Image (cartoon, rainbow, N blue to C red; front, side):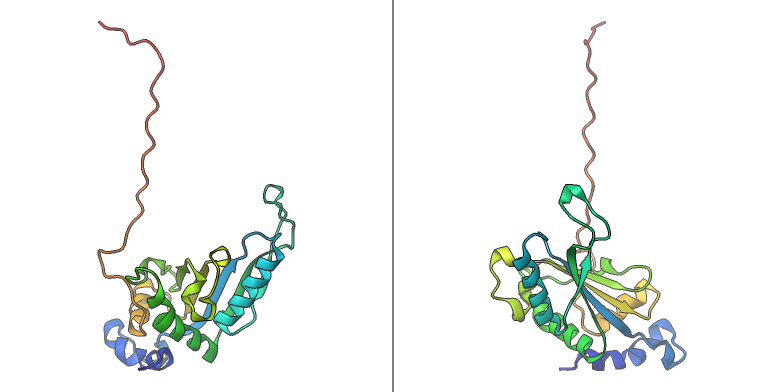
Amino acid sequence: METIKIKTKKAYEALKSEFHYKNAMQAPKIQKVVVSCGVGSIKDKKKVELVADRLSKITGQKPARKGAKQSVAAFKVREGDTVGMQVTLRGDRMFDFLDRLVNIALPRTKDFRGVPSTGVDEMGNYTLGIRENTIFPESSDEDLKDVFGLAVTIVTNIHDAKQTKSFLAHIGFPFKKPGTETTIVKAEAPKAKKKGWNVKK
C-alpha cells in the first residue's frame, strides 16, 4: 500500500491535466499539519496533564500549551491560564500522522461514512473535526470522562478549494459522496401573538 508521502509525490502527474499545471513547481504539497484541542475544565490539573500526554502519544510530539489572552470572570479564567493544546507537525512526522489518521483512526469512527469536504476554506486549507480521541489506538483505553475532541488542520500550498479537494482525494482522504452531506437549516422562530381582544365585526 502506498503511503501519503508517495502519493503526494505523484500528485503532479495525476492532476496536471485537470488543473493545467505547466511545471513541477506548481505541484500541490502539504506544508504542515496543526492538531489542536481544548482542555475542558482548567481547574482540573489532572485533566490538563492527561490531554497533554494523550496528544503527545497521538502525534509523536510534545504539544505547546495555549494560554488565555484575557481574563473572563464568568468562566473563572485568568489571563495566562492553559485553555488549549496545539501541535504543529512537519516532515516525516507529519506524513506518519496522516497515514495513521486516514488508514487506521478514521475507519475506527462509529458509523463512519466518510469525512465532509465542506472543511476546505478559500485559502486551500482543510480542517477536520474529530469528536473523540479514542479513535486513535494510542488512546483507545480512555474512560468516557477523559474523552476529548480534536481539530486537525492541513495547510497546503494551494490557494483554491477545488484543487485542494482533488488533491486530498488523490492522497486517500475518504470524502463523503456528493448528496450525502447534511446541511444545517436554521428553524424560524415562531411569531409572537399580539395581545388584545378579538373584535368580531
